[in-house]
Each structure stands twice: as structure tokens, then as C-alpha cells.
Image 1 (cartoon, rainbow, N blue to C red):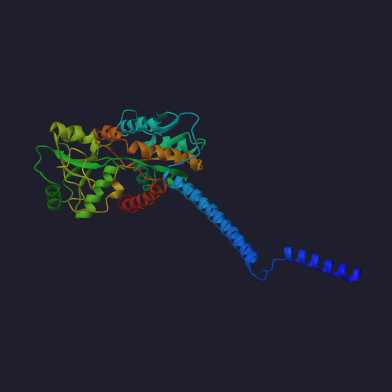
Image 2 (image 1 turned 90 degrees about the horizontal axis):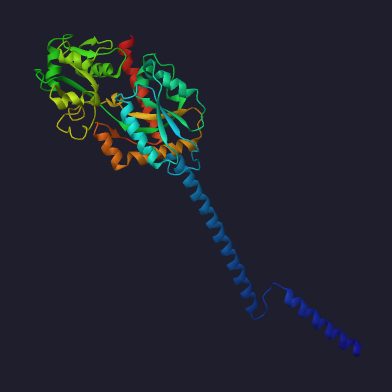
Length: 367
């Protein structure tokens, strides 16, 4: 009897132990429901944490992509001054606006942005010097549209592919002028005269320069021929004032003083929009011309090949901030220049089109 009672008690204890450790629901289902709810809550929390982590990773990737595209963020910070090489004479029509812009880049930089001039071979000496510089993010060179032209003519032995693009920042346009007392009141007047007397209208130019390409552009678009007089270093303004030529094309900044003085009449500007204060001068866009984008005198910045992308992003961001600064815009407009910010990727895309356009335009010269 005692053995039987002991056996019953032992069996009851074993059942209790088994019941407490079991994951199966008891008869009333209360304990099982609680366990399921706890597990579901844990799974939900785990899933939410995973989603948050994935979201954070996507946000970080987006920030990194943005930094690479528009230069808004960068881990690179300069430890010394940043130098931009201007491959033309100090005090010239290219040097002055670049120095103004560099002052405003310095305003937003951790270190000063300075300008140095390395002159020679139509700007190519300065470019080659920077091509051989340490790609450490402290040395850059001004990129002018003339280099694409020189490459198309076989004069320059480098292209944009031999450097890293940083971005455009400076906008300028060419203009065609005549003496104020000229009988040519409009560009159409000049074109009609050239049609009536092929090869007679004396267009001042310099071999292998952007203005010459501007002259060739007008010839092609209108089916005319100018007498392109190579001035070989002679001052265009002096030649026109002395009536040794009838017209010439040059940067608007270079002819502005003669327009202001009343000595010259500007027939058209090679652009879609006229410089501030000169809206009464027609643009080629307003006159119905197209395909002249490669003749724009826009300036950008190149870096030695292999420069740290973070350093390029940093300098590109300086270009962006300076180009949006009202004081910088006003200072450049005062000398008939404008700002034109682009990302490095946009800079490369524009250069691809520009180089291709000059190759096509140069066929008329090299044949």
C-alpha cells in the first residue's frame, strides 16, 4: 500500500514537471497564448530593428553618393593653401575674374585659395605643369575652352581625359563688333554684305584662336566667306579703330570698354543671354542661331589625374558656394562675367561635347 501511494505521488510530481517545461498549450489555452504573444512581439521588434538598420545603411549610402556628385559633403579638409594655376598672363581678361572668384572660394574654405600664373604656349605650359604635379588636392589649373580647340587642331597633346574634372565656375561669351560709324547696323547687314561680296569683308582674327572658330561658324551657318585677316599679334581694337579691318570677334570683356566709350557697335553676342546691363544687344540665340555652345568662353578647373575624389568634392563645393554668393556675382558682373557652377560629372559631359564639336569644326581648317 505504501509502495502504491509512493508511486502515485511520484507520477504526479513527474506530470507537474513535464507540464511546466512543455511548450504545448494546456487545456484552457491561457499560458500558450501568452507564450505565442511574447514570441510574436520579439519577432516584430527584431524585424523593426532590422528595418531601421537597413534604412540607416541606405541613408549613409545616399549621403556618400551625394557627396561624390555635388560636393556637399567631404571628409577631406585642406591642411595648407590650395593653389589654382592660371596659365595666362597676370592682369589679363582671364586672370582677373579668376582671382575675384578665388577670393570668394577662400571665404568658404578652411585654407586660402591662391592664384599663380604659369605662362607659355597658349596656356599649355601651365596645364602640363599641373599634369605632373602631386595629385594631393592642393594644385589645380584653370581650364579654358581654347584647350579643346588646340586639341582639335593637333596643337595640344592632351585632352580632358588626361586630367580630373572639378567643375565649371566662370561664364563669358564672345561678341562681334564693328566701328560705331560702320554702315553695318545689325549682324544681318554684315551677313548680307558678305553674301554680296564673297571674301571681301575683312574679319580680323588670329590663326588657331577661338575668335577664328567664331568667324568660321558664321560662315558655315550663313553660306558666306569672310576675308579672315590674320593679325598675328596686332591689337584687334587698334586695327578696327584704324579701319584696317571691318569687324572682329573677341571676348565680350575685351570689347566692353570700346562699346561703353561709343567707339564700337556690338552686332551680337555668342550666347543665349546678354551680360547684365547689355540686354539691348542681341544674342545669337535671339537671332535664331543654334549649335554655338562650344564657342562659349566658360572656364573650369582641372586637377592632376588621380586626385583624391574627396579633395575634388571639397573644391567643387567651394565653387558652388562662391558661385551663389551675391557679392561674388556682383563683382563678376561688373566686369561682364558671370558664374556657372557644375558638378564634376556635368563638367566632364560638357567637355565631351565641346571636344567633339571642335573636332568637327576644325575639319574646315586642317583640310
